Figure 1 (cartoon, rainbow, N blue to C red):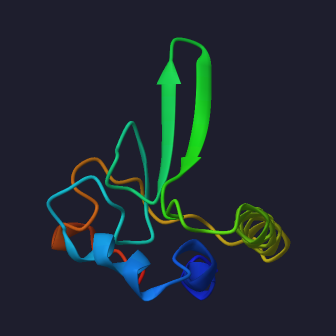
Figure 2 (tube, rainbow, N blue to C red):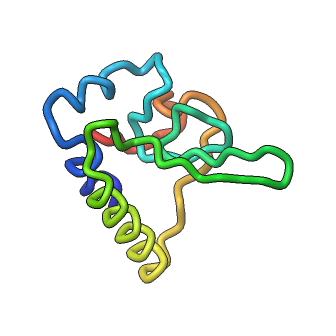
Length: 103
């Protein structure tokens, strides 16, 4: 459901500008990785402490709408038993991973 919610994560035309540059740490695909800033979902761990980052929303998003969209996506995935895509180890936009584009 991440692609369906991109309008919440990037609410204006200017929001999409950062998705044009594949060589910076901006997620452009529906992907996840550990300590990978190019993935849409980043799991960052330091020792036994881990956190999850949803890296798609920009600074101009409405936080309430983004949180609702994320919770809706999580709920949809659990209820429909949707498996996540394979973990990305390199640059998430690399064609070898065959990840779906966000925009």
